[in-house]
Image (cartoon, rainbow, N blue to C red; front, side, top):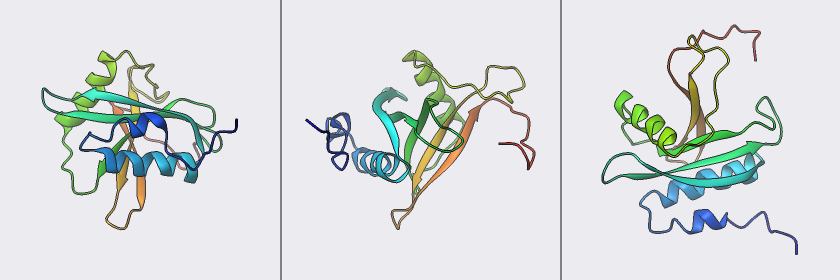
Length: 143
């Protein structure tokens, strides 16, 4: 039987009770249909005692990130993001023993990264790369 790519991932549907379900579904749909990622999975991060945030992982099938595992944290534009919050996200990812993606330009060699999938009020989703540590600035001619 052929899988219908227009239906949401079953793991996303299992998160219906999560307060972040709406943004999770929007970002998952964009990654699956708009960006054409495959093997999308949902992970649940324990940010603190009361906050469980969904995190998506998947593999882009084209572009610079082709065939490399990536992570996306869905966020609303109105959310306040702090260094402490981002640090707790990376700590939670490490606690789950997720295979973290390293940035080759990292100064210590241990800088992991993920993308923030931020949904604007018009439903546009933009992606920002966030690194857990310092990295060398990219030159204009580098990928």
